[in-house]
Length: 250
Ligand SMILES: NC(=O)c1ccc[n+]([C@@H]2O[C@H](COP(=O)([O-])OP(=O)(O)OC[C@H]3O[C@@H](n4cnc5c(N)ncnc54)[C@H](O)[C@@H]3O)[C@@H](O)[C@H]2O)c1
Image (cartoon, rainbow, N blue to C red; front, side):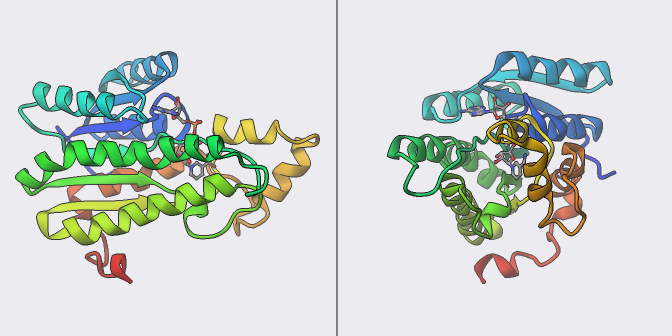
C-alpha cells in the first residue's frame, strides 16, 4: 500500500459508498481525513469506523453546492493544519434517471450543482494554498459516463463529462505548479447510489444483469476496489501519474 503518512486530506461525500471507502483507505495509509458530507449520520459513521481501526478522521458538515460552505471548509482545514491541505477528493455526487425529454431544467440544475459546481467551488477554494506550496493532489470522481453516453442518464452523463473537462483543463493549467489533477472514472460500483437506481425498476434482478453485462468482468466493483486508485493518486508515488499529463491535452 502507498503511504499517505501525515497527509491532510478531504473526501467529500465520504458518508457513504465510494467516498467512505476512500476515506477509510486514506486513514489506513496514514492520512488525517476530513470526512465531508451533507449527511451527518453517514459522515459520523465513517469517522467512527476509521477511529475503530486506529485511524484519524474528523467530520465536516458541508453542502458542496454552497460556495460559502465550501470556502469555510477549506479555511477551517487550513487553520487547523498550519496552512496545509495536501489532497482533495471531489466525490460527492448524485444521479437522475431520464432522457433529455424527461429531464426538467431543475433536475439538470440539481445535478450540475452537486456533480460539477461542488468540485469547482472546492477546487477554487483550495488551489491558492496548493499553488503557493507547489504541491497537492486533486482527485475528481467521474464515471464511465464521463467518457461514453449512458442510456436514460442525460443529466448524469452531461455533468460527469463536465467533471472530466474540469479535470483536464485544471491538469493542463496547474501541472507546472506542482498540483496534480486526476479523474477516476469507475464502472458500476455496489453502493447505495446503485441500489437506489435498481429500485426504480420493476424487476431489479433483470436490470442488475443488464447493468453488469457491458463490464468484461461481468460484475460490479466493491467500493474498496476503487479506493486503491485514489490512494495511489493521493500518494507521492503518483508524482508523474504515468504519462506526466501528456494525454490531459489530447
Ligand atoms: N456507484 C457507482 O456505480 C458509481 C460509478 C461511477 C461513479 N460514481 C460516482 O462516485 C461518487 C460516489 O458515488 P457512490 O456510489 O458512493 O454514491 P452514494 O450515494 O453512496 O454516496 C454519495 C455521498 O455524497 C453525499 N452528497 C450528496 N450530495 C452532497 C452535497 N450536496 N454535499 C455534500 N455531500 C453530498 C451523500 O450524502 C453521500 O454520502 C459519485 O460522484 C458518483 O457519481 C459512482
